[in-house]
Amino acid sequence: MEIKVVLEEQEEGGFTVYVPSLPGCISQGETKEETLKNIKEAIELF
Image 1 (cartoon, rainbow, N blue to C red):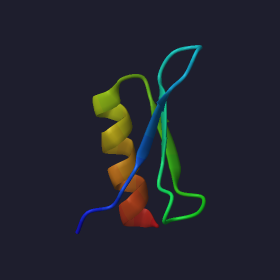
Image 2: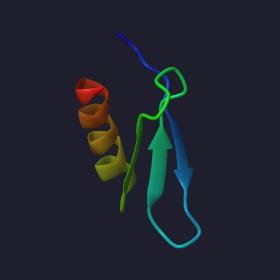
Image 3: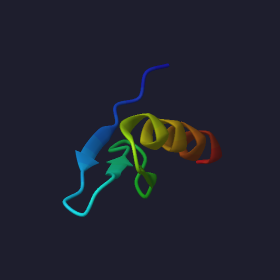
Image 4: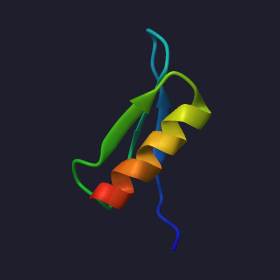
């Protein structure tokens, strides 16, 4: 299954990611790789 995520770089550093199809499913991380790993975990818990 493919789920679209939106990855945004933050001015203060790091990244935020959210899932438009899952309201409130948001995560963050210091690197893109860490952020994507974190959102995969958040999707599983959603």
